Length: 104
Image (cartoon, rainbow, N blue to C red; front, side, top):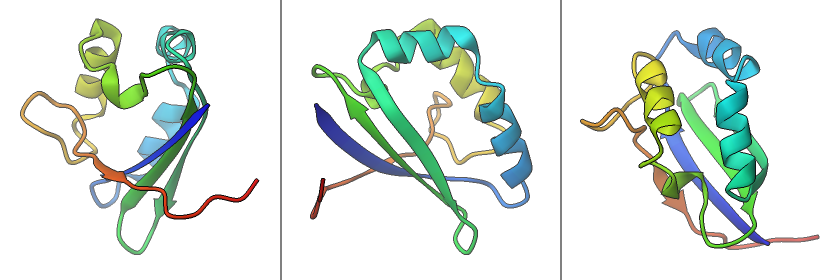
């Protein structure tokens, strides 16, 4: 199993809305991620910087960051674009974070 981490950027004032939308994550998106090998996926919010820190484990070679061609993912991006910093295709701006330490 592979671990992956990245950061994203939340627009100021949208903390509750971001949390609400993820509490109501679409079942088809959750299933697609799970079927694609993504598990143990968490997102944390740094209130001082509005940075979202995501970490996930993956089975296989793909992570959630590799699934952007899926129409469900693209629909989610469109849904989230008003509250996050996004690229021209509405994908969230993400910055991969290399692992420098891990302890089981």
